[in-house]
Structures are given as C-alpha cells and as structure tokens.
Image 1 (cartoon, one colour):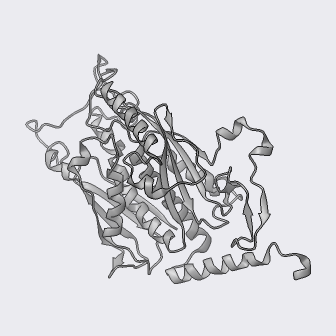
Image 2 (image 1 turned 60 degrees about the vertical axis):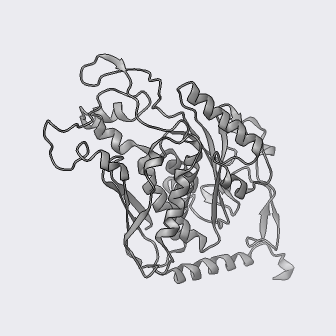
Length: 393
C-alpha cells in the first residue's frame, strides 16, 4: 500500500519522512525532489523564513544507483533555522538559563488553543511547532515521489491561483501552464497577476493577511481510480480529505461543485459521446464533474479547488488570552506570510500526487514498475471492447 508519514517540528533539527509502497525500478533523484521543494518556496507575499531555508531532501534509504528498491524511501530535510533555536528546541532537558521561547498567548484561528487543551500543553510551542506549515515541505518531498511515478504513465499535475481576496481570475477554456509557472502569484495573464499582487500589497499595508482559492488539475488520469463500493474508497472523498489537511484550507470542491448548485441539472451533467480516437473509446463534451463520478475517475482531467483562509498570524495582532492565567492579552506575532495561496498550489499538487499514486497502485499493483506498466497497459487495451456496434463484433 502506498502511504507516507512525516515527523519533525518547525524549528527543530529537521523533517523526517517515509514513503512506502513505491514499486522497484523507478528513477528517482534528489535533484528532482529539490525542484519541487524550490517551487514551494516561491510566491509573492512569502515571509522571512523562505530567506533562511533552501530546502533539499536527502535520500537516506530505499534508492540505490538512482532507482527505487521497493523498500521504504526515507528522506531528511534540514531546518537551517534550527541554529537559532537549539536551546529552545533541544531534545534533552534544559536548565532555567535557557530561553525556551515559551508561548502562552493564544493566536485566534491557529491550532494552539485546541491543541493546548487536548495535549495539556501549558507552553503552546509544543503545539505550534508541529501545526506549522513548515511540515508541508515534507509533504511536497513525499508528493514528488508520487509525481515521479505518475509521470511514467503520462499523468501530469498542474495548479493555478483562482482568486486572492476579492479578485478572481477570468474563466478561460485553455490554460497556459508555462505562463502560470513563471508568475509569482500563479496567475494566467498580466492583468490578473497585477491585481493579485495589489491584494497582497494592500493586506500587508493594512497589517493583516489575505486568502483565496487555488485549483489543482491532474491530466491524463485513467478511468477507474477509486471505487463506488465503499465510502472510504471514493476518490473524491480521499482527495477532499487530503486537501482539507493543508494548513488553513477551509473548503474543497471537485470540478465546479459549488457553482453548479446554482444551475439546472441539464447544464451540469457531462454528456458522453463515442470517440474511437480516445483511449476510452468515448469522450465527454464537458467536465463539470471534475473528472470524478460515483467516486471513480472517468478519464477527464481531475480538478480540485480549495479555499484557503487568511492565515492567523498578523503584524497587527488581535485581542487574545493567556492560556495559563486567563488574562486578556494581545496575540503574539510569529514571522509568517501575508498570503499563502500561491505556495499552497504546490502543496495541493503534492497532495493530489499522493492520493492519485495511492489509488493508481491500488488499481494496478506491481512490485516492480515493469509489472505495474503491464497491468496498466492491459487495462487500457481492454477498453477496446467497448463502444463498438454489434455488426462489427
């Protein structure tokens, strides 16, 4: 079974991750993973942490001579900022002379309050360090492994920003992904790029933060990933859970899920027509469902949109409370971004890759990549049995 685990704190020594279930024989390099980690660190409105870190995942197991072995893949990402936190984040006990950088003031909208009560943490740094978006660096590294495997089967994953604040990108039939990749706000045209930047600049000037919506698209996904058989096997449900797990995400839709609630049924169903040139022998006239019907991929592009709220830490803090004394205080300010929407695109791509890789291997299996490929190609070939007139059989 394809799965991953991460460990580590935001200002600790680093992040550890394990990716398990990858077939043997897959080409994988630290340089490939570093490219994805570098994309995560870009984006207009990022905070000072990105100036400190230059993330690179060291492969420490599961790969030999550039090829996966079929065993768990282990990676390590160093936190360069740990040099400034060695006493506060030390593993061993420390004395009273060490600045522990304790945090007892609640940040409204952050994980610290419920986490402090749940884990009996009188110092909320115990919660903040793990709840930090720094953990997503490990997810992007893990997602790079899934992405690398999916590429072997023609599956590509892309993302763009749909909105920031009250500015939305115009609807377009075709997206130039190269243009989006060159934009610091992952916009599809110069006017939208400028408008998104203005929203971020305005939030910074007002000493607040700004959220938005991002879209992740998987192209070339075959029919049949996921299943309608049980609730927890549905592909859209698994994707929704994965995207909701991204820091500050508060809403997820597949395709045009929310917009389609305002349209009549005749306008939102994706009609299928015969098409011998399509590997399914059919094609859809539209993709309102976002490539998933009944919990299964239908061969169209898989489209997920996620709403990310303005992040909790602001340079003009909100009123708050001390978790230990109950006194009314001002919320603390932690170094952070003004807008997380552009980098969230890359994290969304990673989560999409991880879910699709799991579903893909669940469907096609294989201990070695060649076995997975044979199973995949046999399944695709089986589609030729469908959509033929009886007179041709």
